Amino acid sequence: MSKVFVSMGISVDGCIEGPNASMENMGGDGWGELHAWVLRQRAFRERLKLGDGGETGADDRLLEQLFARTAVSVMGRRMFDLRERSWPEEAPFHTPVFVVTHQARVPWERPGGTTFHFVDEGIHEALRRARDAAVGGDIRVCGGADLVSQYLNAGLVDELVLSVAPTILGGRRLFDRVDPGALGLSLVEVLPSPHVTHLRYAVHPRRLAPR
Image (cartoon, rainbow, N blue to C red; front, side, top):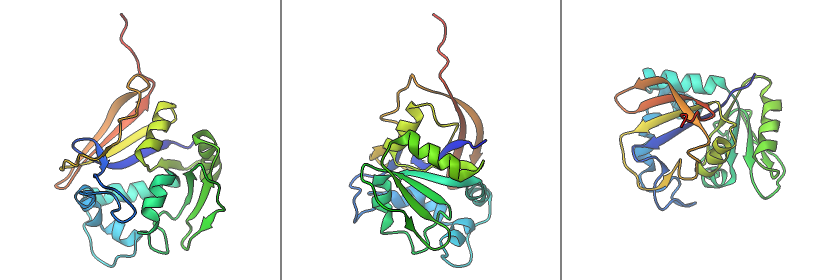
């Protein structure tokens, strides 16, 4: 059965983008520091056709595993709007992508196997359609913060993977809208590298201590 997982880069102060994010300043101030480790990896460079070379250590292996397990992606409309200009013609997903939005739009097919489907019926319908398309593969909720919070609060996420970069951004925080009473986390894996620390958690309903 498909697992639903979140995998995101995050700063030490819990931010997934810096201040002043806009169509012209994608990711906000400091976004480059947050994701500098990704740009060094061979798997990422191959994915975006950035040329030969790149690192092949633990970070690269994690990216390869992430790409291999993702059968479908789900994202929010704000993330789509901010990133649309920066993606190459062959968008880097190579899977169906379901965009949760308030505005209907016909599917947008890109070269290389990526088709964006726009779902204006809420997170549950987007996930239902994602499960149908995944055919047993895993589903990645890739952002932004508001959408991740909705899926976490609804108890629909099985796994949380955070790649913590050694930087402080002071921007949009991932967990500001998450209900702390809605979920619990169990640490599954810690993968350090010279650039970033990857934390993998299993997500489950919170078990409150008896009074």
